[in-house]
Length: 593
Image (cartoon, rainbow, N blue to C red; front, side, top):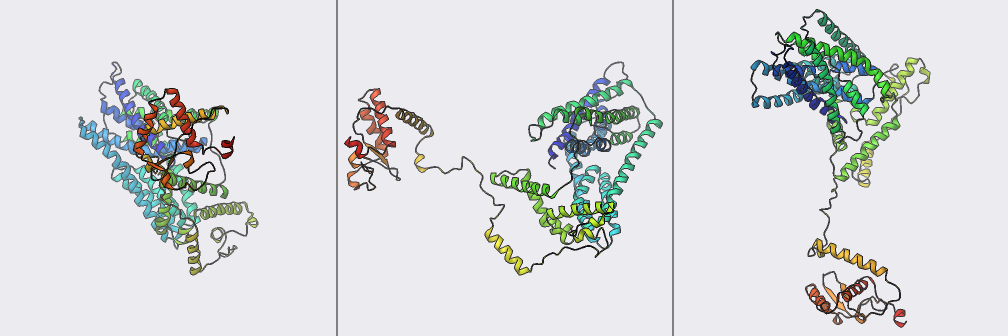
């Protein structure tokens, strides 16, 4: 899910680029005189491009599992091969209908775009429905453990068939069904059923891959072929060129939005790992019988053999030569799980404080919805309310116990193994059970009340910071921003000049000081009437001795004396005024001196 954006860009945009680039260039090659391909029209070339441009998940799994590439590259190429099925199916049916009709209108193009969303989202919805049905059914199979694997196989295969019946994406339906079923079915079924499902699917995946390539080889030998050197070689070269250009161009855009950038080596592996396989062959085999089918099928088989054998056999030495990061076999630990969950909660809280609805925010929302509603309906027993950390600990405990049992060292089993793990390894009642403290309902309610009243409430929506929402001083409403900036710059310049004035300077006549009151009224007074006074007395004296001057009269009073003095005298008066505004006045000792 963290790389879903990158996978969708490669699967949708990259596949569209490959289809139109290969189809357009093949049509241009067919227009060359002397190649004997003048009868191939543009729609047929685009149909051929939609068939040969899809990356095959079976071939990718067969190769990438062998070379042990790192998780990021594996999920990018494998996820692209899974999700581009919707694009391939839609374009295949679309160009097939267009080639039979002969004419294409704007409405047909709009309906094609709508058809893409219907096929992809419809396949996901069909898979989600069967996934929830399978999870809900597994909740009631506690007393009939034998049929648990059957239900998993049945719902998965029904999801694929139902999607194919309605011409939806069967692969996306199967993916959605598996993603939804796994966490709930794994929690409901027994460990024996889980082991049966795991190894049975591994066996049948290997058998299916073998049968697919056997059928491909038999069709290569037995089937009729129409070999055209120009068409076949152009197809192989254009597939390589379009893949490289598409990966480089899309990666330049994707890296601007990714934190972990895709390096040049990663781009090479993604481009070189675009293998073609059974999907391209099956789509080509389903074409209607005409004079172009045999030529298309021959070129498709050639591309499959080149990508699987040449690229698939040379990718491992290239990975070793380029020193590409490989998959690390690390054992999970409780410490790692605790820190992972802690960082997830921390990043979610940071996003809440900033008011940013990011990846961690929606992930936390989904986890809360899953814990509040889905687990209660789809998981049986106490495991529906089991914390994630406890569930992870039970899985680790189970794996460790199985390793000890298989090695024959059952005496080394720790006495603290939970009863859930022990009953799957030894006979019921033979293991040491943990003592789980019981708390009464009244005591539990009391604890919850104390926690609610003393702990800070989480998930509070705080107002995000914005410089436009700050409180504005009412005194600044009548002061323009430009004038305020000019006054501040001028005041800073005067103050810096004041700080650099020598100590021995001439005595200056007393000036009238200004005091600002909170009511935005200005009072002027002499030194003898100053509230700070020579001794800085706290009592300003009677207000009758102070003359009230309004703000509107200040500019008029200051302009009259300034008109009678030169510019130097005016600067000196402003300097004195700034000093008076920042200096509380001379002390009594200074007056005596």
